[in-house]
Image 1 (cartoon, rainbow, N blue to C red):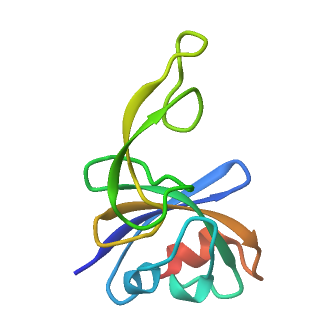
Image 2: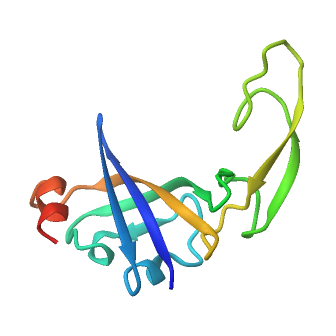
Length: 125
């Protein structure tokens, strides 16, 4: 059984919602940057873009890393590491950009709005 915590951002507000099978099965195999229809989570008329997430160990999904594997990368200042000194680099663990059974949290951003407010739609279901 797959279960995800969705964090949906719309402007300055965020809504957290947990989805399990069969709704969660629609997210399997999707990648960061892809769009998902709102019908999947009960928000008809909305379109969401996947912007990131974390796996079961708390490691972030990295957009440029293909697949769902976990790997260690040598990174500089930027995604996943804030260098305290100029030119400093460090090895950090990341998960690939594909959503799998090991993913726990998925971050979504509203691409297209529907007819009703999002908070109202998600509170009703």
